[in-house]
Image 1 (cartoon, rainbow, N blue to C red):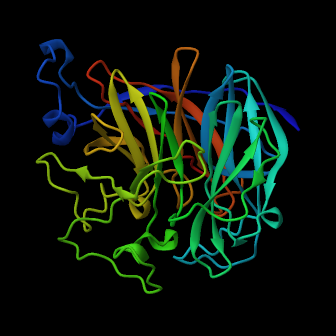
Image 2 (cartoon, helix red, strand yellow; image 1 turned 180 degrees about the vertical axis):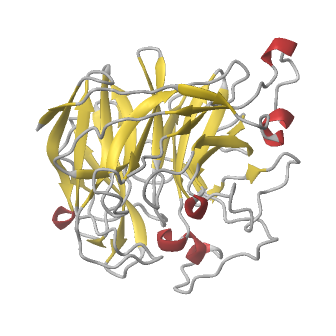
Length: 367
């Protein structure tokens, strides 16, 4: 299926009342010139069409392979399940791959790349995936609940970026929770995972699965996402999962009660001008936030908001560079008239300021 989708970007830049958050100011390089110091925060308002309209898509992970943009989304369906905090209404059963030569060009749906019936260990709920390429093989990473209803991370392979992908018979050993994001840096591949509430990260606080949800006190450090380097075969961890520390402007871990800034789900990493940018969803406050650091392991210092809340409860994204421009891939529920479990992937340009901060985007659709 091919759809021609115009790239509509209404850039109505408005100066916000406040300057950049103090977290951004405190991490400015000591070597920055006066001209590079943070300026007033801009909020850019955009309006974009869904990339495809014949199916519902969400949680886009975008990559550029051989000059072409490939998007690996989850595939929303009308499951008829009431909305609950555990996310059971997100009952996806397969994955499609989308691609396009450039933003604004024709978008091709390459069909089903992986179906849950072809994953021996999986029981239900195929949530946000990611993909990577190494030595002639494309690797597709995906979360799903196993037959005991515990989220694990699976891996499947193909010789094509569009699949079909063949799943390994077992999930990655030692994996848990959701939202795998794989980042390559100097030939090494790192996997970031994690999501609270329905993503079950709170059930692994001791390193062993606890079926009861236990959260830190509001004045205690928040639950952090996890990271581990992948083994050369890309099908296992080369090390134990460790916390990705997200710090405030004073170098202290963000607190569990800091809902406006703390990690909820949807980790992503990109690198710009030598800095690592760790971005993520704040969940129940519905922002895509970001923090910066000097290593793929972190720590990362909170900087601000990339994307304000969109139509629908969830907010999930990825960031990719193509033809010299950076793009934010995201989703909302505009195509379904505001139904949270039925979302659609969109894209808009993302801009870094001279000081390295990212312009905040407002993509809210008013029905």
